[in-house]
Picture 1: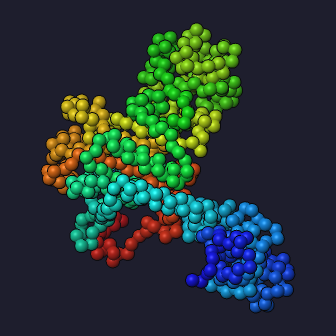
Picture 2: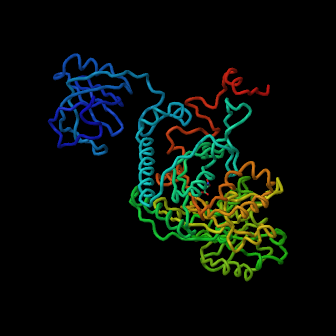
Picture 3: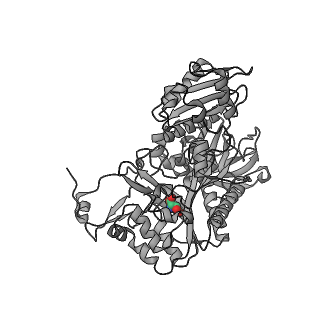
Length: 582
Ligand code: ASP
């Protein structure tokens, strides 16, 4: 090897050893008689020192010619450092260099390769290979690596078999658009890239694989929202001969194991909550349960008093924000502006200040007496000093706006502790959702999800009330994984396709292979998939999944480093039998 040690390895015990290191020049400090160089590699930084009075002319000359990011090999003696640096692991030693060789020079990098860099996002993405030389980025990839290894270790210990499934397939049922790949050999025909290996993992259950997993890339051609990637990684799993309970326990086990092994964090009780409960009390299906401030519905006590806004609303509901009764006009205006933002969409905000002295002051004093307002504070379990914030309107919209307001207040009041992880199962989702545009039901999860057995009879008569045997794992308000017990019976599957508005021919064309397989002894089965990039971001304490992907795409789905997507040559198009619209 070209080196005896790496740049993060040498300690005070190594003093007097002869060593050879390789790495990149991070910094050169030339103080006349002495030159210091910070040499960096994946493992750390080691200080090299050149003393003009001791080293050969040639060595000094090479040292003086070095620029940032030159790749060098240098040999010398480990010395105890006079001024120690306790910020780095090698800070008590330095290398007195007697031999140096430039292995490769470097152009001046477009941004500083240090923990704090002057490079903007786009520039760092363009030169992502340089960005990855920076310690924080490398540490993120290291975290991802540890998560990958521990995931495999746990699932292997539970007898899951890792099986790879193809990327060139046909449409899968996750509800997004497919990326398509034209076939040269079969002109006019196209593969689709998998949105997930859903159908294959179910086929593997028919094959008797019993416990399958794959850490797998999935592709979804969705409109890009912040922090979405067109390709992302899932921990994809499926099990046979199990109940929902077995799945919840097995994968609660995986998450506990990862927190323990990777963060040395012991996850407490994993709570369970129905979808209906989550929607009613948190306003969304991925509640952050690190704090309360639950939504309280107020229709029965606020309506019929002459305040039209409330009287006409499908839902009036509020939250009681602890200790904020002394909010100023300005603060309240800012909250009103917040809920009126188009992304949140509320028309206005009603407040009630429950003052410390027990008096009440509200923005709707004209319509409600103090006794009436007292009923509100009672129903909301408010204490003196609390501020009630109330929204009204259509049910879903009001819930979702209140949910945003609740999260904002949780953040403002520092109730969302970054070092605490609350793991939650959300259960019993609706099986179907009505789509106003297409006037059809869509599967809320995907069409292979089993209805709850007790609801099967209502599938055709009253589809909207049917619950799914589906579950999501939510951590600190982030949806980390989701799955379901599957339909394994051909006639129920056919019924489901009917409810979803597929003709028999359409269903057969798209998913006939699966329904045929179900005729050859499909075992009862179910599974789950975790968003691996998001799980890494959660473990790393970052909001952005991009930070945990080696070569991510930007917000418009571009890889600015390799400049993709890009056009292809006319010859390529010809071979594929494709002509482009002018
Ligand atoms: N294939 C599903 C998804 O990607 C997960 C599952 O049902 O196992 O969301």
